[in-house]
Image (cartoon, rainbow, N blue to C red; front, side, top):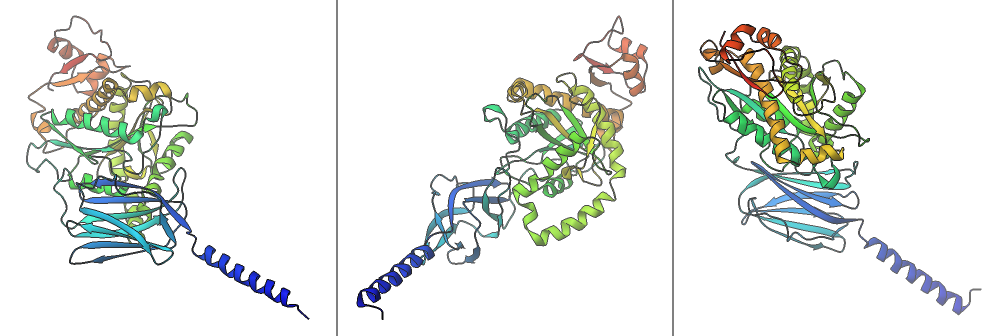
Length: 444
């Protein structure tokens, strides 16, 4: 027989158990630890950093226009107060607990938007994340519309892609030097150089600190009617002594070296970081598009490799080259069937010496000038039909900057002229040349 004391103790045990269960059921499964926001020309991305995976639901309300996000079993451990929402369609962000466990966030809007949201699992240095993309109902006017209108004697359009961006910082070097920052700074310098040339127009793919999926980058290049696509990056490796600049073209048969294979994998993973692979409906079209693109690479690959040799030679005048030939690898950002493309690693940001150089305005300018000179040399030797260079080729001289390994006889052969003509036109007394020297190539 159970005594009264035993029954009383049993009741207390049951009561304590129920209280403990209630406490556990009301504990939060995930915390929102921080929040980040980026504005792109036609969209806004909000990233919530989570302590664990979550389930969420998104819906919109009218009069006034709002977006509501409910996150199950979560709590807010940060604030939205420091977010710069001035240039976004967001007027205000409010939050509060919904019921005992769930979190509700409300976005008051200034204008109508289309919303997409998805979660990303923990990956490399990133934890679990909830990504909310707000797409403007009317795309903002931006440089994704080309400055060039097709016509006879047109300019050659060079699309310049600064790698990474937004929540994808790329490689991180000493003193917190970020690849996405260096890449954009060099890209901006390169754009100015092309814009200052009467025969060229530079077009930035990414104009600020925001993320673009690889397919979006090539899509923008097509909108700009680009004749060439350049993607700017800064290399990284586990060994901080690794150094040197490199130029890559696409390989349709895989990477040409273990280093190229490593790089291709690292750069292609950026889409996992940015979340491009998380929108399943879009991915099905992309997968089919990729197959079709891969079938059409041969036509542009030859031009890419040829132009890459010009660029690499000019880069050799300002930086040590990691490889003395154009490498090939399966970079997703280069997979455009009708636009010759190059990916340029401007140096190893993981190397303390090169990271310091890459942060230097003077070095960035030299690197931009080397890339510019290499590509303009290529196009002046191989002008596309209908361009001003093609029309004026027989009328005006071309400038050329001497790169390491150049000889006048090689330069003359490449530009369909003679050493004697170059010496005479430049009033040179001998065929001695030096790296960085600028000469004029007489019209053929």
